[in-house]
Image 1 (cartoon, rainbow, N blue to C red):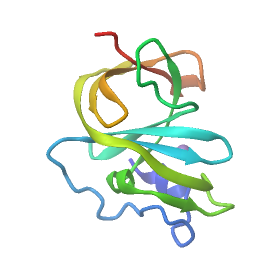
Image 2 (cartoon, rainbow, N blue to C red; image 1 turned 120 degrees about the vertical axis):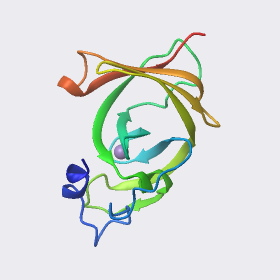
Image 3 (tube, rainbow, N blue to C red; image 1 turned 30 degrees about the horizontal axis):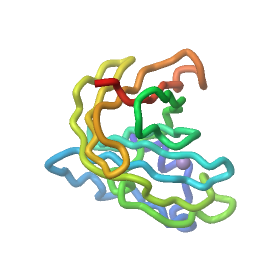
Amino acid sequence: MLEEYEKKRHFEKTPEPFTLGSHESTDKPTFVVQRHDARNLHYDFRLEMDGVLKSWAVPKQPPKETGIKRLAIQTEDHPLSYADFEGEIPEGEYGAGKVEIWDKGTFELQKCEEKEIVVTLHGKELKGNYILIRTKYGKGEKGWLFFKRTD
Ligand code: MN
């Protein structure tokens, strides 16, 4: 599952975590949003599922309120240890730029279907029920919409 993650990175150059030994289990699954000041500033939204961090790149800040929908492009699975990662990915490496944790917390998985994921987030910035839904917009199979549910 983490093959693509490993292939894209040179671990002798990047400070990002290597995947080995990163499958510690936690009581409650973790979510994290990392502000990634790469070539294009974006926010990486990650959910702990099936022993990895399922990941989406959100081009703008994830919505704290209802009524705003963000495109979220699914990216490669990341190791669980990535949820703690902050640092500078060096120039020339994949995703070069500064990574900072923008929000982090636990979540409850309410629904997990092929085309729709519903989670209750317990973060500092993001709280409440959020939906990820597959969309035909965005990059082929990888485009989702991400928004806060009205309830
Ligand atoms: Mn990123």
